[in-house]
Image (cartoon, rainbow, N blue to C red):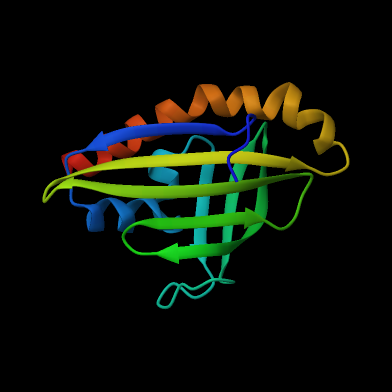
Length: 149
């Protein structure tokens, strides 16, 4: 998935791979560490599997915008990915967790975007540059939440 336009951020976190994976892939917790997210959930949180739908609401400007993504792969506690299904800007996200020991892990998140309609213009001009700026801060927030809990 990762092309030259994709944005990747990585962080080492003082928590087990299982803890990092569970937190980072739980849409109900996205608002705790992702800028702009106000709500999120999986349609079937008890049995996530390829094809499960992830619904996320982001505050963009002064409005809340809902989007739906489908789970493209899941291999706990190592990898997880989603692909946007609707809207003018559709994210493609790949997450990997690498254990560095019993209580330390490396989390890498790669995100890219597909533009549809007006999104074809917005993705290269605004969305990718914003993601490049936002991703390190998002991972820093995720790390802080996990290490302080």
